[in-house]
Image (spheres, rainbow, N blue to C red):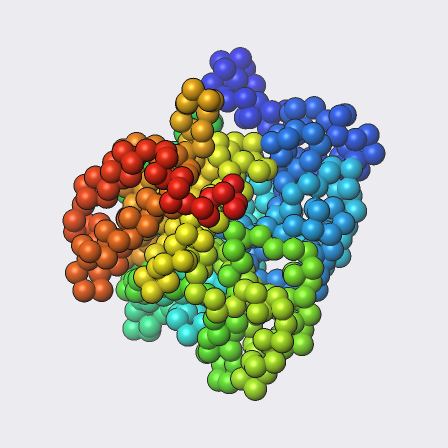
Amino acid sequence: MDNILEKKLNKVELIKLRKDGLELIKEINQYASQGYNSISKEEIELLKWLGLYEQNSKDGHFLFRVRIPSGIMTSEQARVLAQISKEYGRNQVELTTRQCIQFHWVRVENMPKILEQLDSVGLSSFEACGDCPRNITGNPLAGIDHHELFDTRKIVDEVEKYFILNKEFSNLPRKFKISISANMYNSGYAELNDLAFTPAIKHLADKKVIGFHVWVGGGLSHSPKLAKRLNLFVTPKNVLKVAKGVCTIFRDYGYRTYRSKARLKYLVEDWGIERFEKVLINLIGETPKLGEDKILGYDLKTFTGIYPQKQSGLYYLGLTIPNGRMASSELKKLASIADRFGNSTIRLTISKDVLITHVRKNMLNDLFEHDVIERYLERASFNNYAVNCTGKEFCSKAIVRTKPWMQAITRHLDGQFLDKLPIRLHMSGCPSSCGQTQIADIGLQGTVIKTENGPREAFEIFIGGNLGQEASLAQRLEGRIPGEFTPLLIEKFINLYFSLRNNSESFYQCIKRVGTTPFQNKQNEVLALGNTQISSKNDEINKVI
Ligand code: SF4
């Protein structure tokens, strides 16, 4: 590599040039025996390819993520994950917005044993983090869904197997997120991905063919973008070919100079969708043009509850896990429940719910005997529509804590507004937006306010996000709101929405019609109330912060 080219590469690119992230897999035993202090900063960066992110304490503890394609795992796999959490992760199990499971407090010294345990049940953490194809998200109800055009499990499996540990694609400019779902209400959150496949139908040679439309260049974080649809119709057997093509374009043409501009969305934006499509067709060959789109909307519904499957007489049970975090013992119990009442499968949704499937009607009542079911099923709560990221507790990029603030908000709202659901709240601890702030009805993004007494945790507020046919990013309001003000602010927003809305207009539709000004004015009013009045109105905060 000549010096001129090296000068153009960001520092992570230079690290990857010296060593591919996947190389660390064979070196993990050595790191484990020599311990955390023997690992260089460069190697810590590359440990992401094994699913490890250094925790913000920088004291040898790591966040550790495991891939669960489409969020579907067996009860046996769930038991192993519960055991890993118990032995190495201080009993915490965290669900992610990419249908993965992650742990905290993991040490490199324990990685050989952990990898062995994962491998014994066909699970992997490889490339769950890092600049590579990440866990493939999809329809958590694949195969049992009344609203799916067809079952996508085999397709997800094929694409997952192709990309994982594939050195041709293990050094991308940045992470690469794929979603494959044939659910007609966008359960794969297509627009948020670098590459997404959504259900479609086309008549080819006088035959009605089921398949996908293809979307590229989505991603939140800085400069959020919703993915754009290509003028293509892809049959299920050609999904992998398209995925390889798009990933090849990203690898070969994606930007490697500024890390903040490296995601595929920047290339798509610069090239435009027509040029992107042309380059893709050159790689994969002629492909039929768009068919009939079968995305009918975006379903805001909670998964909490009991719902019939498409198989007659069978039901699935949806549990919302508040803050996306449960104990290892709870996951273990759920695995046993899935064995006894279901088909030994546990599924995870993008909105951090857990599903137990294939339960017979005559067994539904018996499920309530189990404390873990009782705890998480059927309780109307804003938690059922709330998503947040890890936040400052563990994440080194975080500006604020998320889980305690979200807990304060949902407790406050549950006390008065349960009849006003669904309203979706999303929170991220920094602009990286892992909590998907910009697709919320009301999104909160962590920031700080400088005060005489030092920095104070605060939020920027986004309103009116949506996905599906009317996809739209939430709009940011001016100003920063101290965390203590947020429960009252959201209470006022909900009251305002109900006073403004026409008939059954959703939060998004209401904002689209009236604009953000009434909400901006309300936010300014709340800020003007001042600290004393706010804190006296929000006892919930003192309980959790
Ligand atoms: S949004 Fe920021 S704080 Fe939250 S998990 Fe992502 S990087 Fe960390």
